[in-house]
Length: 280
Image (cartoon, rainbow, N blue to C red):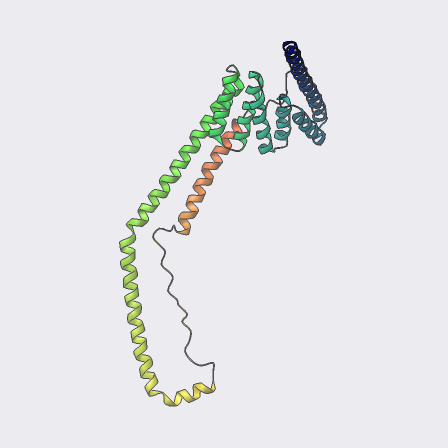
């Protein structure tokens, strides 16, 4: 009798577990379907240029199901069109990490690369485009963007090295000037001290011989010692650049930046993939 009871209990537990599993699966599919519906609503709102409603629908879709990678991807495109690149990147990243489709991963990482290009983070753009190509090696658009990112990264690295070399050369020149500058400054100080000594002797002589003039000076407060009009200019530190040297360095950097910008304008990054081709 006990055995029969345990067998019945075992089957009941199994049936309950199976029923619970089926209920969870039904709920998962229900949430996924609602997420897809919100995504469609977001697509419709975005096509009508209603960004506010589109954003709300995509957020609802994301909240309903983490399995729907289309919603964060399309929301990323919406942010990208508004030049909200930080928000766009976070949504592309979410899409790339949650998607199980190579095609969706490819498009998400491609657009992450585009965000990095906009922000001139060329090293990160290179890595994003490489990740995109790992999921679809046949995409020539991504391959072109990768080549452009690599070229701009190399140019930036060369410019940084060139500027560092300039700064180092300038420091070496300033260090070589130190002994002469110090000697000149010492000579100037000796001359000034000598002049001050002579002035002190003259003041002492005048003080002894002009007793009557002191009484007159007390009556007129405007008279007296004249303030020193010529003050010695502070010596520049050898490690400091002169104003002209600073100006020359700034102009050189601006010219290099202008050349890079002109090249980017001539070779624009190809457009963002804004359409999702997956049918639901």
